[in-house]
Length: 453
Image 1 (cartoon, rainbow, N blue to C red):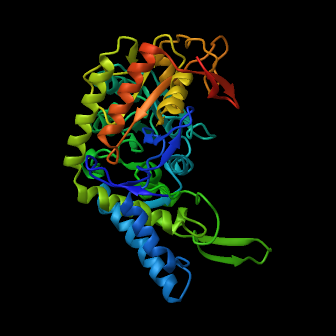
Image 2: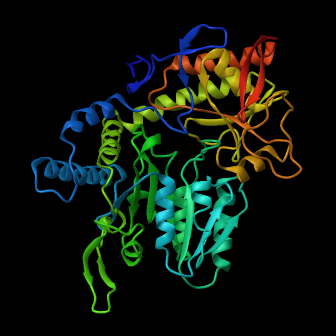
Image 3: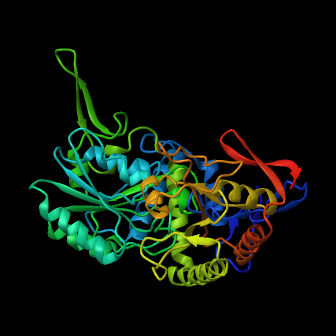
């Protein structure tokens, strides 16, 4: 795999000079505009992992030099994440596989009888883990403003009976990129005795996040969206409910002592702290990659990164606004603050067909579908059917729907200006002239045929 540094992007990432084939037989540099799904690895992360790899050893178990070095590196990675998130003194960092894993871990640690509240606009990772025995879930209708979100949460919590309560909220939507009023929602939740977990999967790669300032009780994010695609994630925050719960996974590392009883059973004393929920051999390379990305983003400076991203967002939204057939999806309105994530539909086009044409004819990678946020996308599309096409949506529709799907473009610190310029040019040409090739469904995806239109 190759590496390229674009003079217009502040952080070098892998793959900017990768050449991909077009349906015409030509090759072009790949424009990766699907950062919201998985971002490319930073050059810094790749170099750090490569430098450590020869010294890889077992963590928390071995007496040898490499084991001791790996243990120190793993625990230092935990401290780096603590600093990156500006955690409180008593907070802890648990390394997981990703945001989905983190939120499922927390769901399993909630006290029996906990009432969980979440807006229907959440990603499935923060919408579905709470549907388990012993918990009650209240799904709140999609708000159309920050004020409405705060008021709707307050109303729901005011009506909730006594007992443990948790509110789950995203920091930035994976569909629209819009920022949510996390601090205000957290203050409201705490006023009614509810704890808060923040899904920062789309927020942490784009904005400085301070748990101390936001006041949330827990935060979850994924390495693979933070320029560290090595299979690690984070759940960080309060320790009391986590220490009181059964371990997420039972096994070595989570247990302090294990002994046979006289009746033949096994008695276990579990660890407290992060080890309680990190059973088995930990993903030390993944944790180190996350820490490396945290350091790189911090050193680059979020003020500079955010300023550049806002310039790119302005260019993107202005360019799409010039194409009448394009409708950008939004909960909070055109002026809402957002990160580098934007979804839209094109009049007269099925979104799967349009995305396939971007890839096959221009070498541009975007995402189409419902983005693992089905209720939100259906709300934003207003229940309208997608335009018929030789290619249908890759995700299933509800009974009575032909298909519902949209197109998502997303970018970040490693995105060159040229990629967005090429994207806007391609959208304009496809809307004006149509696709130059025919397309068909194959394995649930829309692919280019060898025939020209």
